[in-house]
Structures are given as structure tokens and as C-alpha cells.
Amino acid sequence: MERYRVDPKAIAQAHLQAWEKYGHDCLLIDTDTTLLAEAMGAQAECAPDEPGRIVRPAIQSLGEVDRLKVINPESQGRIPALLEAVRLLARQVGNEVAIRGNADQMAFDLACMLRGTEEFLMEMASEPENPAIRELLEICFESHLAVHRALIKAGAHLTSLGDSLAGPDVISPKMFHRFARPYEARLVKTLVAEGIFTVVHICGDTTKILPDLAHYEFCGFELDYKTDAAIAKITVGARHVLFGNIDPSGVIARGSPQEVRAATRQLISVWKPGGLFVLNAGCAIPPTTPPENIHALNETAQEDGI
Image (cartoon, rainbow, N blue to C red):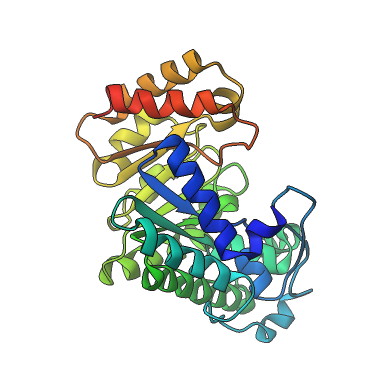
């Protein structure tokens, strides 16, 4: 894992080996969820064979926001390794399989990492009019947008983002509408204007904010397994692409191949009508997942999904 986080050849080789083994339709190129925060000054640590985690925010108060600068993804942190991995894969298999470059954390999530999640959530609740909050979110937005553009330039066919802490499992729909939604909607609108298709992922049960998401311009929504699939189909799924949302741990990692097939067929029956559907897990698939379960997912997609 340590080498994968920093070596573009290791990143590319890992995805090529997985593609040769499983034959999936799209390569999701990502490293971990601390990539962008590290590039902007947060400190992370990485235990052996584990993804990184933030251990010290970049700023200790909102009064330090002016220390942060919009990043250059071509030269800062580990982002250049991600971009080079995309270039390698685009040259080798870009005409054979879709390449999805993940631009890491969106403005709200990134701001939480840079300031400290608990501290930033308390500040938004107690002093929502503080202009430093908007300044921080704006710097995070511009830095995040730059990564999308760099990924497409490197050869990705589409991009994606995570805004995990923006969902109702962490903040209220009211807070989402005020502090997270404006930046997500603006990002999608900007990317659409540039001809870039992106996929938005928010962890947890997003059922309560699906009507809000449905107003975004054309994009994809990668929905967690907790989200009501039927409601998603008639809200965001009416004119956006749905990605997901098989339970990655309870079903894909811990279930039997038969249980994986059953869950996959059930989701296909709900989301396939009318199209605009990409079968996937609802979130990251654990590394302990048995290979036969991945094969069961892919085979069922081929049998029932086409």
C-alpha cells in the first residue's frame, strides 16, 4: 500500500492486473482520501497496508485561512503520481476500457480535513456567517476543480469526487443545502460546460437530499447502499446516471457468491429500466473480498444487465 500511494507504475500495474483478472468495464484510479488535503498542508500517516488518514489539520483556526493557497496538481504532494498513473493507463489501455480519475475530496469534505472535522462542523453551526468559512470552502473548491481538469488532461475519460461528510449521516439537510450543495452544483455545472462528465459520491444514506441532488446538471451519482434505491430511481435517476449501490461489506465482502448474485439481480431490476445505470458497489470494496464474489458481481451484470 505504501508504494501504491506514491509510485505511478505501481498504481497502473495494480489496476491492469485487476482488470486482467476480473474484466470490469471501468478502471477507477484513486490512491486514498488524504491526497488533496496533504497537498494543501495537512499531515497524514499511513499504517502498513492501510490507506492514509489525517492526523493534523493544515490550519488550527479559521483565522489562518489566508495561509492556504489553491494548489497546482501537476507539482504538489502525491497528485503528480496519480496523474502519471492515469497517463500510463491511457497509453496502454485507454482505447479498451474506460478510465475514471478520482479527484479526491470535494470542497466541504476537504475543508473538514484542513480545519479539523469536529472544529469545522462546530464553527459552521455556531458562526455560520463567518466569512472565513466561505473563504476556506472557496479555496477548497478551486483546488479540487484543478484536479478534475488535470485528470482529464492526463487521459481520464471521466472523473469523480467524494464528499463523504456532506451527507445526512453527518450533517442536516439544511446544513448540506447551505454549505455543501452550492459547491457541488457549481462544480458539476463548470465541468459540464467543459465537456467533462463527473460522478458525485456521498457516503451514507442520502435519501433525504436526493431531491436537492436531482437539480444538478447532468452527472453521475454513486449512491451508498443505505440509500433507498427505488426513491433514487425516480428522483436523481430520472435524468442522471446512477452508480452503485450494492452493499460493499455486508454483501460483496462477507456474503456468498449466491448472495452477491441475488443482490445484484435485485438492483438491476430496479435501476435498469430506462438505462442511465452503472452497476457498482455503494462504496469502496474491502480488500478482504473473496475473488469469487467479484466474479459473481461481474457475471451477473453480463447475464442480467445488458
